[in-house]
Length: 113
Length: 114
Image (cartoon, rainbow over all chains, first blue to last red; front, side):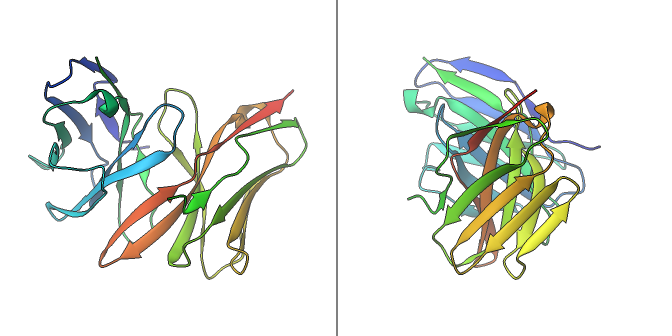
């Protein structure tokens, strides 16, 4: 069964550094998302992406965050200058369309020191 | 802003018995509800969903019930198996202005004891 893949599984970075989290969504999917889960808290929506542009973003998704789909397969989340509070599991998700459910990757654990 | 609430952080049941996971929501604009299951070190996995125009959807051992007037949904697992032990997230879909997103509850950790 096709799946969403995320790399790396764990990223450690120093405060103030830039990180890029990578995702390969399921190939025929059209809608792409990033969610995050801070330890012990709920899964939170960050951003949705469709037709090569952001369709919605949350308050968390400030100017330090950006997303890109540089080619037909990758979907990336960039954090320009990481803060300690950015430490979380970041989940990429994709879906086909209509009311099809989101399919999530296994996440990237980001640790900012 | 807790639009989707799962008030029980954990639930423990015996193998073979019924597991009932509950979820409440506040936003009447949600049009679709989903349950996801999550194992440690993995992403959430879609389990079952229900449209807001229905009150029940069944898939094998899993049944989701929706009570729209009470803004409440529940997931029933019968019979429960040890492999069902995981964190279960309730999620609600909000479709606005051509875009949509899922709003998640905090999750309920289910433990099925052999």
